[in-house]
Image (cartoon, rainbow, N blue to C red; front, side):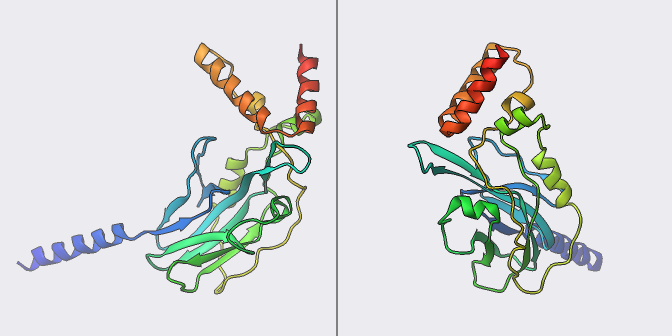
Length: 234
């Protein structure tokens, strides 16, 4: 009987440990890039708002990414920030929430994107041990790379590296490190640089849909620059 009780107790302990998981939540206007050295894949049509975290220290790469109304036209502009790293110490089965430091919503998207100021709170109002560090991990616009000749930045890979090493966390919440970055502009993804050659009708249709989507969400200047480049390719 004694060995059986011991095995039962161990199984119960393992089950309890496996069940433990805190959750970390972000608003729709933010996106996960990597957690603890692992990339988090996202797409244009899906948004991951919650991840689970085990007990211990975690490093999460996040960025602000939103469509906002353009100041000079009726179109929308895609505003992105550099990646920032949230290092958090999870010490219980809690629900964590990331939000802009000045309120529930971002009041000035373009200014905010230069150096995102965020806070992390707990649903039970308990103290959260974390820190936020700005990085220079950014994604150049499609047009900028066409005219500068620069290669596409692998944001996911760089963020994975940045979140891979363990770093001590502060005992109390600390403000993000202010590090100005170039102002976010209307961007288009690296469709031409990163998309494999079209091999079927379906691939061609998807590529056309992507181009149409980003064309509709680009500002006037970006459209002109793209058209200038496209004409030269004919």
